[in-house]
Image 1 (cartoon, rainbow, N blue to C red):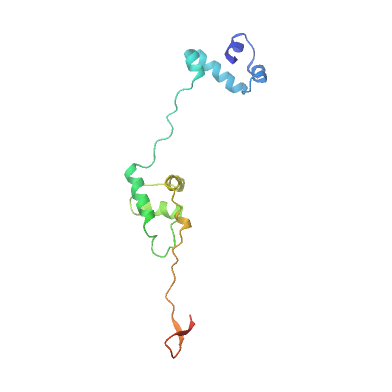
Image 2: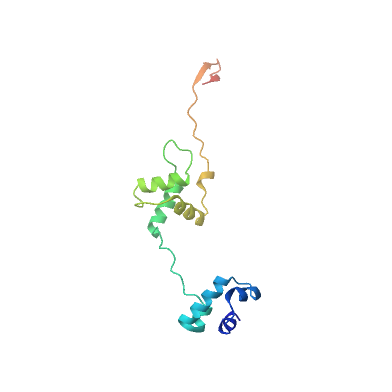
Length: 137
């Protein structure tokens, strides 16, 4: 319908008043029609998208790392920590937090919610006669 009205000389803003499409979209349809005919006007070319940042083996190694214990001194993995450790352990040359976040999301992993409580051993100040402890430091 938009192409027919464009062919009759109706302006894109006027067409957008009768069809729920922006004038810019109507102009793009017209340009695509001029470039490649009706098929091109109706269907946009497939867009290539961004190249994958991680290869399958890199993804698998990162997932395995996240499934293991976090580094010493840390109670749990964070997205930032995973990104830093992946580079530090040379699993990948470089990786960003968002790439890691999406990778973990696709594998339904939320390591920041898993808390491994690390407590230091208690030292008793006062020993009872039964061998128990009366006061922890």
